[in-house]
Image (tube, rainbow, N blue to C red; front, side):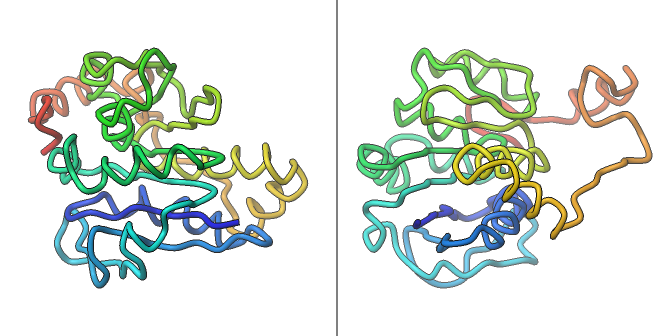
Length: 214
C-alpha cells in the first residue's frame, strides 16, 4: 500500500509528520513524501525541512493521498502543480485525505464539492466558499474523502483511517506504540472550549482569508 504525503513550501510540519508517525507503524504501508520537486522542502518556520523522495510525476497512482495545510497553502490553490496532480491521482486513489487547511487545496481542485469536510477552525467560511460543507469535527469521513481539523487532528484522522482499513486492533496497537494518550493542561484546543479571550485574540491576530493563513 503506497501512501503519498504531499509537501509544499511553508507546510505545517505536524500536519505531515503526525500522520506519518502513524502510517510508518502500519504493516505493509510504504510512506513517501512527494512534492513538485525532489529534495528538502521547508516548513512554515523555515527552520525545519523534510525531504521529498519523489516528484508528483513519480507517484501517479497512490493508494492513499494526504495533503497537509499551512501558510503555504495559498500558493497551492488551483491551478498549481499540486492540484493538477491531485485531480489525476484522485481518479485512482482508494482514499484522499487532508489535515488542517489541506482541505482547502482539495476543495480548490474540485474534490470536495457538496461533501462534508473538516478544516482549521478559522478556515470554515473559506471551505464553504469553495463548495464543501464544513463540519466542526476532529475528522470527517465522506465517501473516500477523509479530512481533519487543525494540525494535531491529523493524528486522530490517521488512526481512524487505519482502523477503518486494517481493523481496530491494528490501530490500537499503533496508538499504543506512539503512546498517543493526550491529556493537555488546558481545555483550549477548540473555539468551543477555549476561553472567549483566547478565541478573540487569535481571531484578531489571524490574517486568514481566501489567500491563506498567516
